[in-house]
Image (cartoon, rainbow, N blue to C red; front, side, top):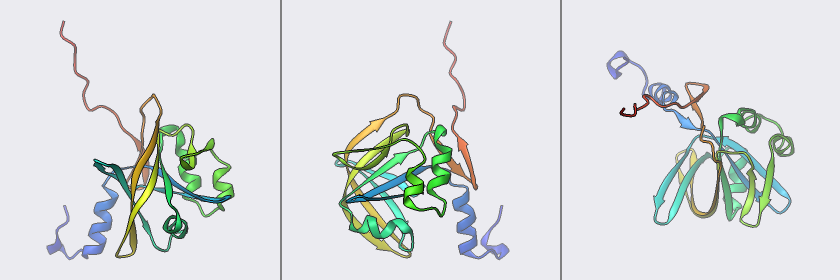
Length: 174
């Protein structure tokens, strides 16, 4: 265990701590006319059930930030363990067109593109955006949700994709 007394700078200690924070992998998408863009993100969390809402955080230097700042809507696609290739593609330095060439993407009247076989796809109306440090926090009010029946969320921890599993199965009496 490392402590501040051992001389580790706070910023490196924080970075190391965040590598230990497992996070669901998502692809956040936006569209403006015929232009669409998306990127892989783990800085996504639910915010409230009343109204149903969530937040996403992006570095102001990211490719998605400018489009998300100008957009009225965005979509958060929670990835399934089957979607590792989509996650890697959307975190690579390729063009938006190349990103959307991977996976099965659809559009709907609710808003930006959604991944058809994602764990869940959550369409949001952007309610607020708040700058903090190097990032912007975007708050989205949930408009619609599409859920996949089988549950196997893709998770990222310590630089690797991982999956979840039950810690212990309860035995049925008898």
